[in-house]
Length: 468
Image (cartoon, rainbow, N blue to C red):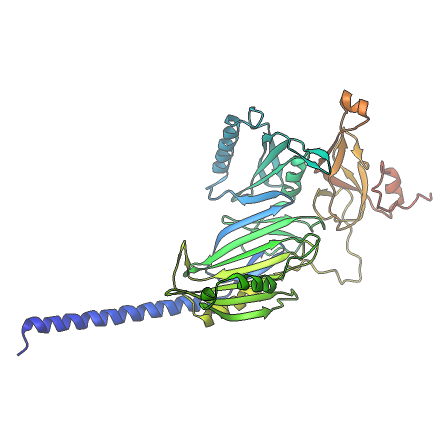
């Protein structure tokens, strides 16, 4: 006869087995639900640089980096309001007054108030560095002093910083070129006008205007998935110089040749080859990787872009699974799930379209005389524009002929030469962002005559002569 003790033991083991099965079933159900969230819910569109990309609704932005012509634009993190922003700005300003530059002088040299539309803040100039030199073709090349410019702006609900270091005299103008056309975006706003988007941890921002051919824009974000923390994606966009890099498949072939045969045995190719996405010619590699008892996946898609074209940079999208900090674990997605998700994201990469051309037979209404436009923004109307800078002579004239959609230029001011500069026949020049005012249309003879320019830009046509 079986003892009571053994009966209770069997019942306990059975209860544990049921609990284990129940726990396992709940885990499988929960994993199934989390996976379905990736495919059943609508995707969310991110506006990054001059491109759009769709990501799962459960995405988490983990990192962002934006840099235009040497000026980095960053979020200032969580600040409860403008008062907290101003407190943090004052702390930063005080901090710079206690630091020393390379000349052993106070680091902070100048602090200027900054007001752009509804945004307020300051420009800080600090951390001067001594000139550096090198020899080139037997000649000694010496740079000017280095200086860091730092702009702080409160955009209504969050703050951003702009920072650049240069060995040149126009550092203020470099910062203003980026800051002047900057404005906040609402949560789901996709701008219709040309410009550069920035997704940030505390908000979204937009720099209005089409890029110049020489503009250098470096863009990078990383995002993960809330219900699948082991899954990470990284999107990077960098402009090309005078030549394109080697393609993804060429680089991968070289890398495979250098890897050990033992490692390659753990790699399973899920997909490899050319892949064009929304007219962007590219290549992709998707692999499963087994290391010991852990199996992960890696994904790469890349388009090389075009030479010296900011609208078609090199674009690289990478993904990986099974990643938790510095440790690796089994991927939370099956190969089939991974490929389905990867295709949804990759296929969504596209150049953001801007406002379509007008199709009305009636001519569009003219921008009224007296309208204002800031340096860096697209010119709203072909005509003669007067800059707001007074006092110092303006190189090229204070009135200039500017065509519609051209970027409104900076002004080059001619300063008062020092005694030594007079001896050498030199005139100091300073570049600066400004405000332009429309003063005459190109076909308005009377207005053109009344506001005749000092000089026109060399590549601009002259206005019609006054025949009266």
